[in-house]
Amino acid sequence: MPKPLPSLVLLPPPPSPATRASLSAAYRPSITSIVSTLKGLETSTELLVVLPCPSLHGRLHRPRSEIYHEAQELLAGLYSLICVACAKLGVDVESDTPGAIDARILLLDYGSSQTYSTDHETTLDPFVSGPIIDLPTFSITRRRWNLIFSVDGEEGQKVLSSYTNLANRISPPVLGHLRTASGGVSLIQKIPQPAQHSRTSTPHNVIAVGGTFDHIHAGHKLLLTATALLLQPASRTSTIPRRLIVGITGDELLKNKKYAEYLKSWDERQQDVVNFLLSILLFTRSGAEEILETIKFDEPVPNGRAIHTRLKNCLLTIECVEIQDPFGPTITDESVTALVVSGETRSGGQAVNDKRAERGWAALEVFEVDVLDAQEHEEGSAKTEDFASKISSTAIRKSKAERAQKSAL
Image (cartoon, rainbow, N blue to C red; front, side, top):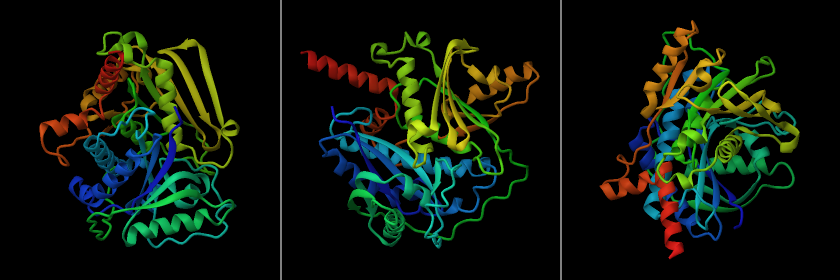
């Protein structure tokens, strides 16, 4: 089966305020049109959706915890819309079959009145990493696409023009067939002033998240992206190593899962997690072999096996650790300062902090991601069930089992 081809979506800035309803009005027509186009391809697509965020511009030097809530709400709203479109059009989101779409979202540090230096290539900051990236860095490091989608309308075409102008200043020019998607209703109002914080926000350099991560779907992608955006960026003035710890449930604990025969192994799930994170974190013109280092621990670490992937250019290590209990590294590594959980597992954050208190350790700051929901976009139980099939590992395994059964007949 051919490898997925990379395609790019350049969205216009979100409406303000960015509610689920306003995001749907602004982006649903465009996303539906794009998904419909990709559905007809003879290959699958790895789709990178870039969302310019003027409301975040100028605030990224502050602790990332100050923008976390706003940023993750944008991610959740957009991932929900993509899942709704895929469910409505019957598009597979977790395979390499023709027409399947593996989407991920990148946030763009974007000021509508920004101007860019003509020598941006020589001033590329080696410490830059996603999932919030500036346009010059993105235009230099991501340059080969099957299709490039922009959105009809003044704001959408402005983003496309800025991207292509920057990307085509260096040789060879950016590669990709341009397509224009219909725009939605986007009421761009005055960007609200950031909320004043009554307490001092803490920057986090060691953050943990946990899960099964079987058959990576949009819920997993939201969780991993939110964890990554919470990490304080590296800089020339701060050489503190950053650690993104991903606890991945061990195979032994999953034997009784539904459709267990279609569960991916720990090694496969670990590789899927790393591959996804690299797609939203790694921005460099160097080859992967130059800036990536993989360390496998043959001897079990406190929770089981572990594989570390070090991004040398931005002082970041992705630490995938096998977990055998609900706590994992959060109660064996005192240096962890923050934990990201889903709305469905928020009680786990309190349980972790209770265990840390027993050890006399500082409590973790717990951050939550939204549960992806179709109710604000779709009506009817059948449509909601179709949506759920895109954000459930169990549903994905069930679908694989049913396809296998049919092919055996």
